[in-house]
Image 1 (cartoon, rainbow, N blue to C red):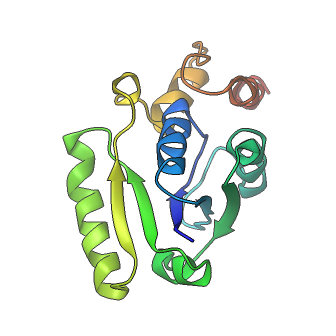
Image 2: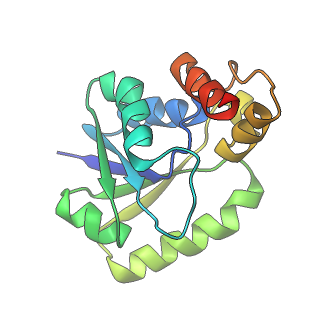
Length: 159
């Protein structure tokens, strides 16, 4: 079975993330959307909330599974018997960091390949950080995230 890990903080999940998952499903038998738990970051949504939002969006798609991990990504990939890590590339500015991470992961575990997927052009500018900023300032994020995520963002910033 060809299995891939799509890791991220998903704080929150965006339409760009959903697009990468859809593309990945065409290439792999199973895609594991893995939410990174990082004590050093202060996410807007708790780990439980992010897992729940993902479960309600991409978790309903065939051959997609939601999981959480902490520690080294390549270790998690080996535990899950995944042979690939998926990373979305929106722009050239993403490339240098992602390239360094891919090379380091290859050095740590040569049997896990990193595959870069580009989202549709309409999502190349989209990031969770920008979506949170628009929502914080009272803007409409409904074009950028699933409706239940837009609703959850509204609740976070209203009270």
